Image (cartoon, rainbow, N blue to C red; front, side, top):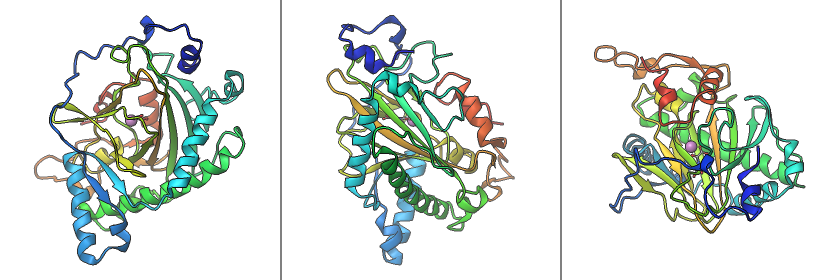
Length: 341
Ligand code: OGA
Ligand code: NI
């Protein structure tokens, strides 16, 4: 399957090919209000006074409940590392198609897979996106090209995993649980971490195509960063809120489907999508944190209110959930619907 990057660079595309036309008509209402996603200073979790710490935990709880999406600043991952990581990803995609072919995984759990769209075997329309997915934890893997990339990926993965663990502890407390409850119950210290790099080349008719359709992320939470171009939109109160101009050196954090499952719906995973630009190439880089692949995630008993609702989701192995997602269309919350009781 041809990458969208190589098709764009061939210079032949003056319009969007029919295979890439994506019908947005069912939900395309862009929020006109000046709504902004909350920003959280996560350094206060570690270095704040007890009062600052409890305030920030409360803010995290509100952001998780009201938005499911927030930006974090002062997270401790150096800006130089983040820039190096973005540059490395760009260089990876700049390898020739022949070189990149070596990394095109054949199976869902292959440690490295380079490809285009989401699942070209079943996608009814294709997405304007090439990707590189790498399982970086608990067993570290990374492409051996371009030179130095693997070391950067290793360092970035480690540092961003530390941020995610800190957040999970804050989130655990925000739910009234012990700080380490979530990580201990779902074995997050072993855990798993999937790095997903998205490349969205310029598109001649951005309104007709889509980079990534409305979807939610698997896993407990995702940290996302991007180059200077915006494109992410988050569903909030029935409308798309564009995420423009995030603060410098910030990460976007969003709740994944497994956070929704384990909190029994208290913190919902949020539908989001990526739109494309007609001039520039956008790169975004997400890291999904989850439990080990063989861990069954079901609602935490402490969060199940038996008298009124009981469990809203059945338990499912993380691995089986990933299979479910990859063998279905990437479509809003369809996958989570399959485990709802
Ligand atoms: C994703 C994703 C959004 C973006 O990779 O799951 O939602 O802005 N990416 O690229
Ligand atoms: Ni996503």
